Length: 309
Length: 279
Image (cartoon, rainbow over all chains, first blue to last red; front, side, top):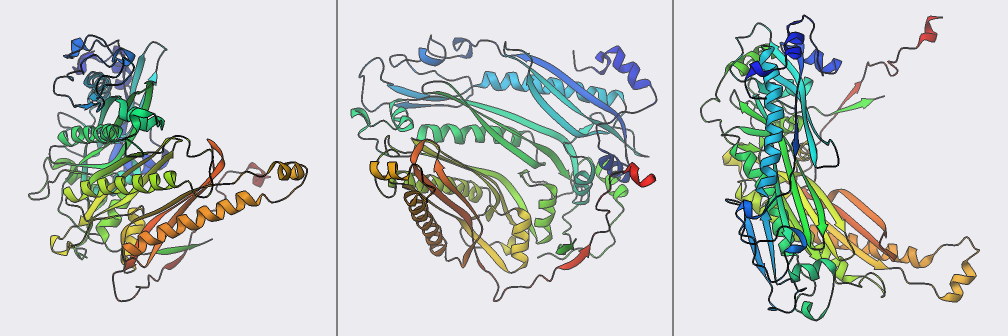
């Protein structure tokens, strides 16, 4: 499916041309939308199924011939990192001890995972927005997004849905409808606070950790002869990875704001362990990109109340 | 605190039309900002003349050498100090980010803690905030608080200010009973004083540490203290106690009374339709 609105399925075009609207809004959100002068015109959705294929590190510009996981043994040279991606190396202070000894460690950004995720999410998003455009909507409110595995073969389905709305007695819709995770009262408060919705924003960052000997000793609590110098200490390689995976997601979101603000941000970090000393951290940051349309106008101090029941 | 404008506010419909027909922000109001506050929380902040600046985070993992949890007496010092160091380092990183972004403090800090047998992991995420009016910006260190923006607003209205996060943690061995005691007590319903005493010991140490942090910050007290206590899932004879809260002090000569208004909701308490009432 391309980005052209004419690529909408024929059945969808037929449905849109019929009279009744559909909406994912609750009754109270529906009422609040009408209060704001927004009328729902249809429940719009976008799907995209993506497959995460096996990745050759050489194809990503890497310097070693192995691949991921246990093949990253001591004697191989560290991965050079994906082009433009974060990479940080950690050198063992002990020298070459044995083939089992983790002579070096590395944190690296998995840009290929981020790119695949972005392609899937953006395709589903643009398909949802195509439907909104086809309905002549000014924007899409109450966006809900989900990612679900379709099978055991690494296929993930991206699904976005929301309610397309039109401004009652408003100007003709612009080229690109706006979108927001908010609906109902919270959207109304956002307008009252002086913020107009621009779009939903989401980004993902992925950092893989291949532990070197010091990290391994600290994570496992071992106190063998090579860890004598370690003792109890902060596990800096993992701290670096955890900090970086958050930074990367925030930096990408910030770069897409173009001077606007991000409200209601939600940052979540997940961890997957593939094997001993081989861990992946993935962060996801999403929120509402909003633009101030009037100058700061402070509200009156809130009046505290005690409810008698 | 900025005074609200006295001119009548336009209707909501007019505001929405104005917003959606304004392609760009008014001059001087555009500033990239990220925040995990809800719109309600941001409105609360605005009402006292504060604004969000940046979403900030701090992480730390600290190791606990192998074998600390299984045998010993008294406090498991390695675990307690690992928790304290990890918490202090994660907080310092978050505050550094907030300071770099121009924030005066961080509110609504979400605290995630995980105690593993061989390491402690602390993760903090919050929103850096500052007064809108640059002349009101303070010349003091950046504070962190796990109070929501709403609670922060109420605290400020009452004349108090947050100074930082205080944490105290203690992990203590519950000594094993002797073989004869174990056999004698097998069929009795009695208190296991070894566990009770271990809990008391952990509690006192943790609360003391949290209080010491508050005193170091020149605080008057700690509000919204959260307590987590109990046995460690991976060590049958160890118990832990962790206390966390926000250090506060009076920012005005006296406490400002809030004088809340009493309200009675007119909502029906049982709005569900009941067919029996028709008979």
